[in-house]
Amino acid sequence: MKKSVGFVGWRGTVGTVLIKRMLEEKDFKNINPVFFSTSLIGRKNSLIQDIYPDYIKDAYNIFDLKKMDIIITCQGTEYTEKVYFELRKQNWKGYWIDAASSLRMNKDSIIILDPVNNSLIEKSIKKGFKTFVGSNCTVSLMLLALGGLFVKDLIEWISIHTYQAASGSGAKSMLELLQQTGIVFNKISNLIMNSHVLEIEKKVNAIIQSNDFPIENFKAPLAYSLIPWIDKKMKNGQSKEEWKVQAETNKILYRCNNPIRLDATCVRVSSLRCHSQSFLIKLKKDISIPEVENILSSHNPWVKVIPNTIKDTLSYLNPIAVTGTLNIPIGRLRKSIIGSKYLSAFTVGDQLLWGAAEPIRRMLSFLIK
Ligand code: HSE
Image (cartoon, rainbow, N blue to C red; front, top):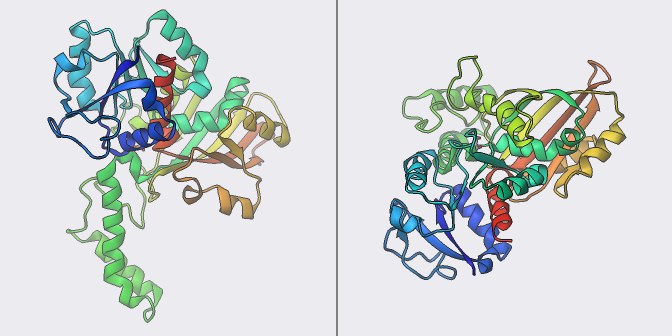
C-alpha cells in the first residue's frame, strides 16, 4: 500500500524546488500526498491540483498529521519546534523528514546526504530511527564537492571561506536584494553615460546609506557590498553558520569521536541562489593534482572537475553557470605555495537543490522502497 506523505512548507523557496523536483522525477506516483498549510487551510491550490485535488489541511492539526506515515517539512525551525515534539509526545511513530536545522544535532536524528552517508541512512532505518534532517547547505555542497577526499580519509583539516547566496536567508531576502539593486540602478541610470565613475560611486554609497534603503531582512546592505556574518554568535566567536560546518560534517560522516577539523568564515554575497566556497585543505599525504582530480570526480555523478584555466573557470565555475542544476563543479585545483600537502580549491552549488531540497527528496525514496 502506498504511504501517506504529508507536506508542510511546500510554497517557500525550498518547498517549491522540492515539489518541482518530485514532479520531474515522478515521485508522486509512489505515494499518497497530503498537503498541509499554516495559511491556506480548507482551500485548493492550482500548483498542486493535479497531484492533490483535495482541500488543504491545517498544518497545526495534530490529529490529521498523526495519520501520516511520513511528514516532510520545509516550513522552518519554529514550526518544527511547535509540532514535532507534540507529535512524538502523542506517540506518533511516523518518519519526520525536515529541512530546518533545529533537530539536526539531536541524538535521535540522522543528518541526511545519501551520496555521502548512504550506508548510515540505511543502517539507521533498520535500527528504527524515525527522524531525518537535511544538513546545512554549505555542508552538503562541500561534502558533495570533496566527497572523494573525505571517503578516502585524506583530509587532515580544511580552512573554508564561503560566498553564500541570498536564497540561504529566504525568499524575502532574495526580494530585498533585488529591491536594493533596483533602487540603486533607478537612481543612477541617467548618470552612467555622462558622469565620472567616482561621482556615480559616491552617489551609490549615499543611496545605500540613506535611512530609507531597505535592509529589513539582511540588517545591512547586500547590494554592492557583502555581509561577513550569518546567523547567531557562538561563545567561541564563530557565527552559528561557521560552527555548523565541523559539527554537522562529522555527524554526517559518523566520526564525532574523531572529528576532522573544519573552520570557516561564512559570508553573504549578492549571488541569488548558489553558494560558493573556497578551500585550503591540509591533506594527510602528498598526492598529485591528477590523482586528486580522479578521486574527486569518481565519488558521485554530480561533481565535475573544472580544469584550472581562465576560460573553464569563467565558463563553468560560478553561480550563474550552476543555478538551477544539480552540478557541483570544483575547480581552481592547485597545490598551495604553502606546501605540497596543501590543496587549494573552489566549488559552487545550487543552495536550493543539493543545498536543501534534493537530499530531502532522495530520503523519501529510501522510506518507500
Ligand atoms: N544557513 C544557510 C544560509 C542556508 O544562511 O545560507 C541553509 O542551510
